[in-house]
Structures are given as C-alpha cells and as structure tokens.
Image 1 (cartoon, rainbow, N blue to C red):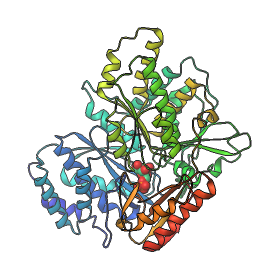
Image 2 (spheres, rainbow, N blue to C red):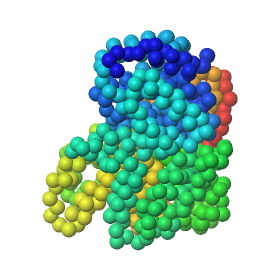
Image 3 (cartoon, protein in one colour):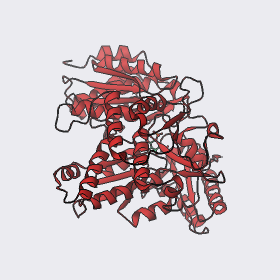
Image 4 (tube, rainbow, N blue to C red):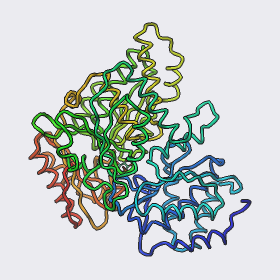
Length: 548
Ligand code: G16
C-alpha cells in the first residue's frame, strides 16, 4: 500500500463500532474482558499489529486471542514482538489509545497520528501470524482481526487453535528463518520434535518415571499435549485429564493451574484418581502456566508452585554450570521473582545466587532475566522459563571440556537450550524440564518439596469501585495511592510474627489483590482478611475471599 486508504479503514471499522461507556486497557497480558464486547478492540489490534510490522520492516508480529486463566466468558488479545517476546511497552499505550477511539473517524485519526509520531513507512509490507484458544467467542474475534488486517492490507497467517507459547514460538521461528539464529521449524511438528528429542537425550540412561497426570484445564493445552505424547513415545508415561475442550463452561472450571494455586487443593476431577506419592500437574487455559502437586501417604495435598519450580531448576542449572567448568564472573546464573514469591523460596534462592524482584507480568520478568548469562524466572502462579543469553550460548559452544564429566554436563546444558521455550514460558516444555531435573536428582515429589518449607500464604480478591486508584512502587510491594492506606497496612503487618502483606490492582481481572504471609496458618488468614477489610473500608467494595 502506497498510502493509508482512509475510506477503506473507516468502512471496515464501521462494522465493529466501539461499545459505548467501556474503557479498554492493555494490561498485564494485553486486553482482557468479557469476550462479547471485544470485537472492536480485536479489529483495531489487527490494524495496530500491521503498523508494528511495517515499523519493523515487515517482520512478522504475533496476535494471540486468549484470556488464559480467566473464566470462559472472558477473552483477550495480545501482541507478540518479532523475537517472540511481549509487545514493547511504549506500544501498549498506542494499543490502549486506538482501542478507546470513540468513532471510526477518530480511530483513523489516531492511526494517522501514530504513523507520523512513530515515523512508520506505510509502504512497507505487514505480516501477522495469529491464533486463538478454545473459547466460544474466539471465532468471532478471529473474524474481527482478519477484517482489521484486510482493512490495512496486511498479510495474515492463521494458525487456528494453538497454545499461547506455540504462537510465541512460531513468531520467533518465522523471523529467524534462514539466519544464524534460526530458532526452529515454524510448525507444531517442528516444535514437538525439538522438545521431544532434547528431552529424550536429557533423560537417556535414567530410570523411566512413574506415570505423570496432566490436568489440561479443559483448554487448548489438551490437543497440544496429545500431540506431544505421541512424540515422546516410551520416554515418559503421561495421562491426560480435563481434556473436554468442547464442553460448554468447562474451561478452567474447578481445574487448571490457577484453580490449584489459588484454592491450594486438587481439582475435584482428580479425587480418587491421583494416588498417594504420584506426581500430577495442571496447565492453565492457554498452557503457559504450570503447577505440580502430589498427595502424601495420609492423602494430604502438597503443592509445588512456580517458586518450587524455580528453586528446582535454578539449583540444577547452577550445578551443571559448575560441573561443566563454565562458572566464573562472566557466566552468571540469576533468578527473577515477583512480590508473590514465597518468602522461604526467596531465602532459599538468595543463599545460592542473585535474586531480583520485579512487578507482576511476564514482560517484566523476561526483561530482567535477560541481564544474566542464564536467567531463571518464575512467578509463583506457574508462569516462567529460562533464558540463555547469546554470549552464554557462545561460551557453551566454544568451551572445551577437559573430562568426560565436564563434557556430559556441557551437553546437558546445550540440550536444555533446545528443551526450554525461550520466547515465553510453556507449561508443556516446563513440565519436561521439571521431569528432567527430577530424573537427574532421583527426586520424588516429597523430596522436591523438602528443598524448603513454604510460609503459609493467602491471596484475597477485593472487588472495588475503581481499581485504577491503586498505584504501587517498589516492585508492587508498597502502595503510593490511595494515600494513607500503606501506613495502615504496615501497622497491621507489624502485629504478626514474620508477617508480610501487599496490595496491588490486578491487570487481568477487575479486582484488587491482597497477598499475605506469616509464620502460622491462622495468623496468615487473619492478616489477609484484615488487610482486605482495610482496602474495603478505604474504597468501598466486596471482599471476595479466595485462599492462595
Ligand atoms: C497473566 C500474566 C502473568 C500474571 C497474571 C496475573 O497471566 O501473563 O504474568 O501473573 O496474568 O496478573 P494480574 O495479577 O495482574 O491479574 P495469564 O496466565 O492470565 O495470561
């Protein structure tokens, strides 16, 4: 296209008018709200994705339509930058501005302003690859996206129903194809082959584990896991549960990683299925979160969350780096967490390596992890991955091991770079990573769990009139607004042994989240509920209590 076809864009935009009285915001993981009011947003995201591609000289941009852990009636949309990472922060603001233009005319004017402000050459090509999860509103939103792409003359590539991490992987593969940084084959088979081959090499010679149960949250992880099972063959027995992707209302309902993490209990569908000592894990609605758990001999539930995964994986990688003879000032392994990380996990990790705390949201963790040679990042809720810096990869390739033990540790590290999805956390790739470490350590779930003892903790949601009045600082650990509330939280926390609590607005749900931990369960519950009550009294609202 030689210039912007204003009339065509207006004519197409008219088919998806913005609903009146709604304000859309590009939050923690893109736009997220009720799926039936999102069509105008997704149409405009199509235009924005094309502009982003033009700005980056025709590089392929990803668009994922998903609301991940949210209830089935919600949906969402987010953009993926060329290396498979989250959209650059400055463009999140453009996304919010475009989504809130009141009319088609105002929308086109906003597009024109963006083109000149960002100095976008409109004659460049635009390429966009997109996918959706299994939500009922998905097909209509894909249609809106496709019209947005058509309106601006972009090339679209529809990848159908895929997990979020598969879409991120595709974006990186497409953009790196034929270069020295080629990330892999841009097909599901290519990805599954990469994961399964590296997994098999990493567990070669190890004892075949007992069957692992996977709760697929009745979401898009189910069909992807089915394919993976075929590729893994005899190397690991996997049993899939909660695979009902066409059953209305089943998605994330009493199952999935968010349910297990927040309720701290087994999905009811696994009662009587999971045997004491057996390992199980839950994915979330778009398969980018992973939570493990097991029942002990007395049938008591034990959760192995993102913090426990970080501890397991980071310690293993440090051992491999030392064994391979790579450790030194220019080869640093570090961990990134958020304020939700259990205090015991932070202590365990900080005794062994540098640990950084950043605000909630994969984009923040990912960027911080890039500062290490090997950056391990996990949110307590099960989002996470491991990043190997280009110089670390170079060091591994050029390193000359001097003993067979060094050579084997080095080969394991190289295989890990293939097993781990470095564009974004992938629950299935992370699951294989955990299984590798458990096999190498000969750990049961209980042995893994004993790395450290979690402090009792609780997460409470408070529905308030306006969550936007809540502003935080210090990686979300302190409130700056509403003024005076933080002092009252501090006053309360001081009364509890080992107490810690913070308040932050959610970026994916219309709630304020309150987190608390203390040395005993009753004290933790009391602290969480008292802080929630404070929030309620300050702002007016309904505390909806959900233990985490
Ligand atoms: C998204 C983000 C995560 C974040 C979670 C909850 O996850 O990708 O980084 O931890 O939302 O965020 P908030 O507390 O702001 O609602 P998902 O799995 O829903 O895409």
